Length: 267
Image 1: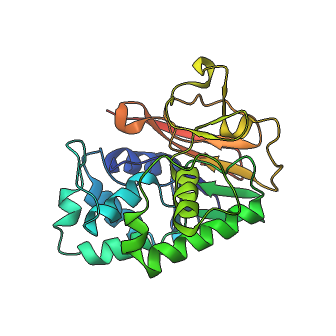
Image 2: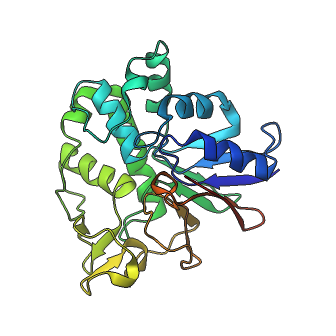
């Protein structure tokens, strides 16, 4: 059995099908981990969502910012933008089934046997894996138990500092931003959403979230997506997977057991 971690899909079903053919993926034997952002921007968001759902236990996916955006739009708490490609999902006959399945996905998945953790954007450098797991669970409970309150308070770039004393809605927003939007932190751990480019061109006062000197050590390797401008090379403690498929890059799959990456080009 092989566990393949696939980068951001963004509704690009055709490259996924070609990638799985290249891997000779067998749902009965292999596993697929998706880093989130299954939908939006690409041409086949509805069919992509249906396909990943159809994989059943052969697939694990965590929520990305575009997945949460879809749920917020569907719940009436956000308007679609001109760049969104969500209309076919929102008008599909199986809309409620698909959205219910998507909302049930976690924000963080850890396999201690494989010693890998799956998340869309990252884990805050001042969090232990235990704290991140606990916050992800609380966040998901808030999403599923009171979605209206969750989505009303989800959007925004503040607070930028983590504190145990943050009140519920601010704590949830901070955690959402960490798990699904974070790329850079200031040297003191404050989140930054102004710069999203290649680390080689980052301002001196910013570091990739995984590169802060006082980052807490974690028990697993962190696999993340969300960052299409990030180079394939990275420290051994993390594994970036987003290769910008929807922007004309490629779609990649990282095999955890063999540590090999396989890619296909995207139009």
